[in-house]
Length: 273
Image (cartoon, rainbow, N blue to C red; front, side, top):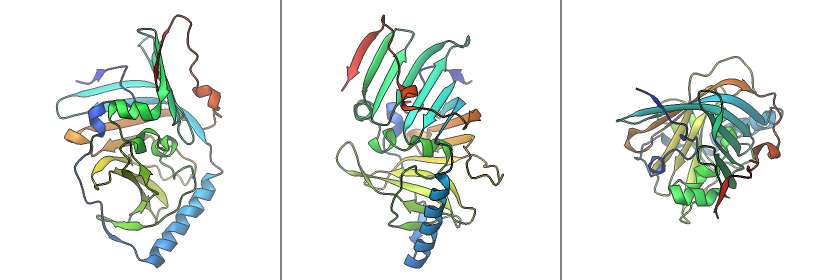
């Protein structure tokens, strides 16, 4: 039976979820230079087209967590602004907010209405406290949840052929982890249909941290679309996360100030530097 838990959060769900997962071979070979150049050009051209798309959206979000021993679910109101501004509001059955968390990719704030507490701090410290890889904590959440190309321009060094079909895995620039090692992000891309299929995160040993992919994508010919179903898999202990977005509104123009949480006077305050 699925239980509702309001403190189930999109990017700090459980510390154990983001420990290194089992290694899996996603690709077979690295493409030759000529083919790499052609696919890279397709991606760069698509990214230019994305410049004309909205840079923020809001939606009703259904969040599901499934492990071999239990399943949990909750729902909330989600706001996102490119590249990494994110706010999630969890409400009770009466529609009253009981928990809010917001981040700009570098710092975060949270309000717990049940105990009247405000917490603010750095995303880095949040990652350290919960053993979550930094590459996920301050990643491009707009791209991850909308199913689009990375928001910022990037260079492509290598492209690998997928092990099961003609899609490819594009190696994005490496980033330093919390321990000083390098963590890797790969863009899963279909060069024929010219669409993003997902994102893969690996540690410096090549073990999977998380794999993001999307549900059935509607072939409506539109460029500026937001995915309706996001899956996060290849987590330890066969844990799976699913995010379903409903009533998505890309016409909303969110500002940075929309992700600042005013602190009520009677709330206690905590700082996580």
